[in-house]
Amino acid sequence: MITQPMEIETRSFEIIAPYLEKLNLREDEKKIYSRIIHAAGDVEYAPIIKISATAIDAAKAAILRGANIFTDVEMVRTGINKRALKKFGGEVFCKVADDEVKNFAAQKKITRSMAAMRIFGENLNGAVVAIGNAPTALFEVLRLVKEENISPAVIIGVPVGFVGAADSKAELFAQDKIPFITVEGTKGGSPIAVAAVNAILYLLDNSRE
Image (cartoon, rainbow, N blue to C red; front, side, top):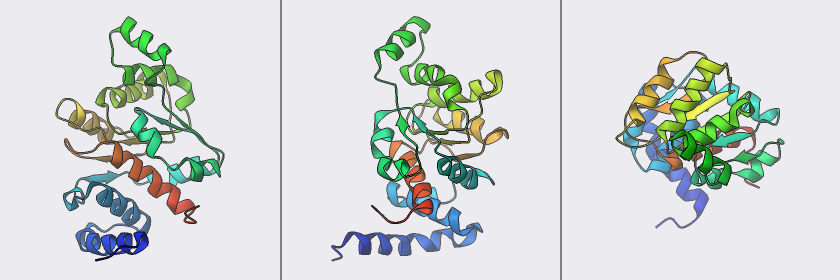
């Protein structure tokens, strides 16, 4: 039995590696894929992860210049390595539980995650958007991009579920204005969004401090 955390992680990545061999991935892509699959405990993610050509570089560049990360739910905000992000000057924000968002959502008859993204508005410009739960949040960000010229540095959009999740991710995949990381279909979730963000942070700083 392996009991040391680093040994467990290393062995896990060794098990995952063969599932990535035929995907023609760059080294940085392999690290993102591996951490997503590791977080999910599911090698079936390998063929459905989609990373646009410039997404990793765009995310790294944004973080290096101190960009903030905006999330749809507290679980994503909590899971992101905020200590690592702080080294570069960024913070993580989630407004889904704020009274302002609750009142706005009730007034507009929309979900709170959707309302939060609308309230973030121009703050999303140049930022990293990480959506792990709510398809409506991803739809709203894509609307902001299309209709209000909001321009995040990258969108990590992996909402999970059977209503809207696959459609929102298909819309993200189909657009070509904003670099993205996503997964096809109904799979996804907050742990997947967290894994993708933390993998990018780890590419920039692997000190584990």
